[in-house]
Amino acid sequence: MKKFVLLAMTLFITTMASAQMSVQLGYLLNTDHTKDLLGKYSYSYSGIMATVDYNMKLSGEFGVAPGLGLDFSFNNEEGAKYKELGINVPIDFNYRFALSDAVSLSVFAGPSLYFGLLSKDTADGMEYNYYDNESRRFNVYLGGGVWCDIKETIRVKAGYKFGLADVNKLDTETERNNILSVSVGYLF
Image 1 (cartoon, rainbow, N blue to C red):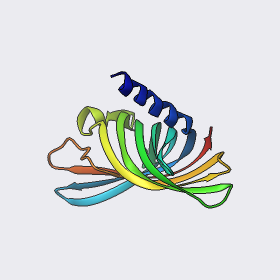
Image 2: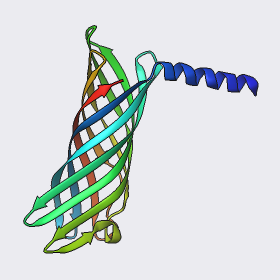
Image 3: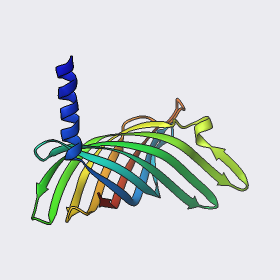
Image 4: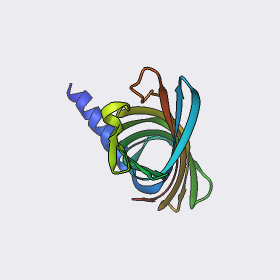
């Protein structure tokens, strides 16, 4: 048992020594794809995101970057104001390619867990909370993308996530969300 604990501590310390934290701010485009008795339709709304992640090398240039983020989406159409706020937990498995001494490119893929805190419409003085009636708070995404690190200080990242869960509670509708994101971050 002592050998196992010592091995686990050694692996943890080695991984932490080669880990790199980043803080990112960016833009997101959230697209809802809905299918009901009348057909299929999609609508999109913009948003902003803030994420912190911690990239740990697993082997060579292969790593994993678990993170924690806050997504805020909004739309203002025909007098109705929509707001959505949620917590995002990405787990990005990544592989790094050194392009030069100052620039590297990484490809990433992995799941993201999402928990909605707020989803509501305000129109004509009335407020409608989607989580109370028709939407689920929890979603699972699978996505991927690329990031570019410049001088191990600045990170530019682009990704796309496919919503795997039907977030609509109604039996007559299915709704899946996909998210396109672009961000700029600082590496510590």
